[in-house]
Image (cartoon, rainbow over all chains, first blue to last red; front, side):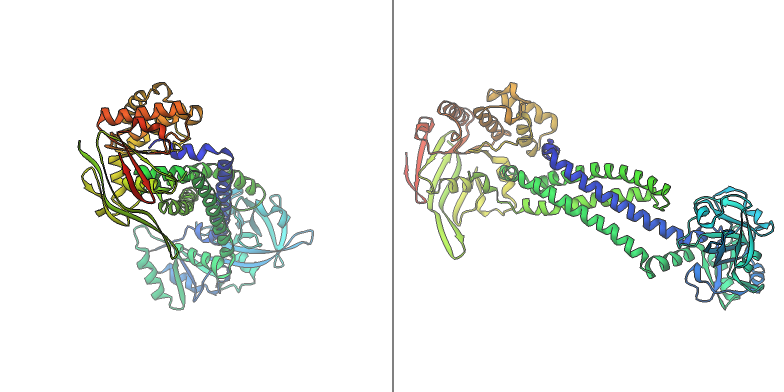
Length: 374
Length: 226
């Protein structure tokens, strides 16, 4: 194809700049809002996703991790006795109150795990290791919340639910979805920190033996524990995400903002491509009079839309990467994955091609006889 | 001479709301290959409507149009662009060149629409521009050449792919007298030398010297064919 599409598009440089600005703005808006959604969504289920478990045994009718009902820890032994189970660990996730030496109180999410079993441990350690919680009153917190918890150094002290706590390790990047930071500790400490009875647990995490069919093991555990639910890790993760993102409305708000970006982009690009088309309407009339098929004219307009999409996306994604890094240093959790990069490229292209439809319809209905009118 | 265009009892009525305007009222006309026909008449007489019908851009209300042996009135709307592309070249009053393409690319565009490869279209476009005396203007944009040169580029574009029919709507209206005559002379040569039918709508009676026939139209009827 002669470079008609490209030449017409770049002919008016001011208009082109406006188009690219509009597309880039839409891309940034979509990336940031989608990244916030992914960040929020991921933080609701990060304990589950990083647990290393294959299956989660919960109280009956548990729908998300943060509001699980406790049950008797005898179930833990029944789990261990089930053929196909390689490892099992009791696990607590429950809100409590952190009181710093300066008297400042903060809500926290206490996470109790068995330090001798590699299930449900903290990740992203930057000081200490997960087993150090075995030290008296040992807790691990995240660097992100150091100021909030007034816990900047190893051996800093605090009280949790009236019991002593001593920082023995730091993670970096474990964000809580709520305002309550995670405080990792031993299962036993967690029982104290959350007011659990000594024979109670929140969950039992299960690691299947190599080669064991997870579905079958799940069914076996359900048969053995009729008063409990058993979920695969991905299943429980999805349930938790769904609860927070859709039942509470938090996710919908973010998704709507992302959709708004898409709509703004379509409107801006549609307006610009339509204006460009109208500027060249006589040329399209000439093309049709010469006998150019509609498919050729469609190709010209869609090529313009695709070029605008590619350039606008490149600029928008560049700005987005800058924004995401800036936001991370400012404490916001905007997740930008390769999947998002590809998804946004696809959405930008769809946005621009959709925007071009109005122009295409105009040209398809154009009467080529217009070329003889003056 | 072989028949290129045959118009038989053609009428054209424009309807707007409940009012109708009869632009052509039973026109019969034959244009043969190798001849130059001037369509003349006052404004609103139906010249451009007749040219549009010959060019398969407008469909007649009644009557028959044959182009290069094909009954185009029997064809569907979707078939007509292909007929235009294959059999007809257009030259417009306002040149209608694509301003963002060079002279050469304007001609190439027409050739590529007709199915030529990029390489062949480039070679052929250069040859056509040389035919109209503009070989050196291949890379010039329309804004950088004179009106006469623009019309010669438009003629090169119109004859790209060697259509049997060349239709021109007031091709000299935007040109001075000398340039206008040169353009008409070129079109007449293309009719005679290449055995092509050339139909030109014009108000300018000074162009009569280039015509093999002059057809006068008034109130949608052919009143004189000489």
